[in-house]
Length: 197
Image (cartoon, rainbow, N blue to C red; front, side, top):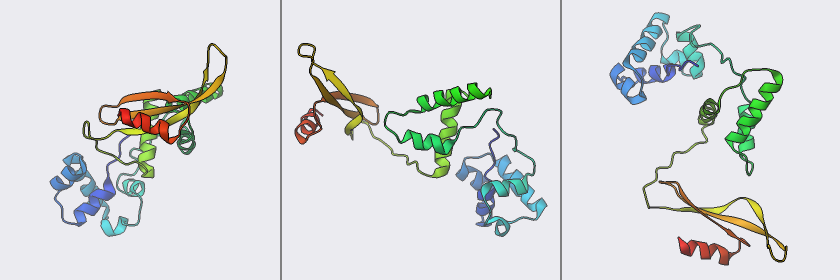
């Protein structure tokens, strides 16, 4: 997949009077890409006022017709469905990728690898605007909660079955985790684990 130049953003910043160098630095793109975009806009007679109401893809297509328009050879998953499924308990990207591969195998279509699947899903989520980046400092915080599905615990002597709930604590900077089962999610169980932290 070709990475498209942020043409609309470049035109907006140019309209505000930023230099090509300043635009490139602020957007993390090459100065050559900025110069190419501004040259294409001048040649086409297009300014910020002409593209203010258009989407990024429309602006790119106006300035660079026919460029970057090739499709992936891989079967594309239903990203909205993947996003919905991930909200369910116990569902991971690895599981969803396996289901996607199975579906592609049944239809005989080529499928992408797990890494590409994850990167494209991350790009989809970024477009939705539902991500937030949280900066963590080592040792400052610990995140705690009851996690995932319940487990069954069988007493080997009596054969009695009980439900166990998993308490999880994670240091977000290092991602070290602590997990301990409990027989209930009551206040006393919660407090006994929190005291350990």
